Image 1: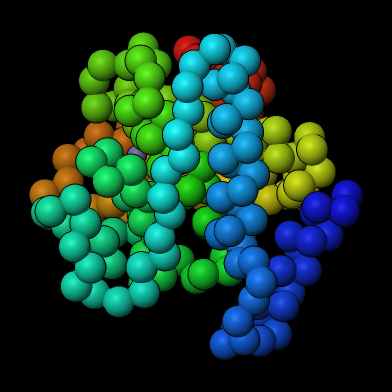
Image 2: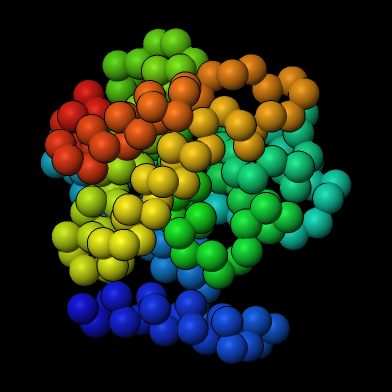
Length: 198
Ligand SMILES: [Zn+2]
């Protein structure tokens, strides 16, 4: 309960005074929880783990992975730099639901680079990342880090996204249909990482 209050408080503070520097932002809190959760999952499996970097990009012209302006896409992961980026052009820096959904999905791609998670095709990578996100969000709900409503909205956001909002010209339709994404997310939410094949 205490940590949920801290997270809620961070959001409230952000809403009240968005320009005031905060000790720990919403994305920092999400980062810390995801990092600890994945580190524990790797330790349980006897695997070595390293953390990704996370950057909120707030202006166009930021080179990402050598081929992308990271401000132009809502979220992305670059394996060569171990970096997750979130564009504030799409997502407010204190939007808990969107940040939670996007960061936990992109973190899944970081995990897929760290170790063999048993996926091969592009859509398998994407749906497993949705599954990982669902598993983390179930943990966050059970641990009282977030309200169950937040978890439900994260599922809705994942389903609503489909391949629709990623429709940049060079982007193939690889994220799955709305149904596939919801099923993958729910598999993780109900069955944990094991249900995602990890
Ligand atoms: Zn993805």
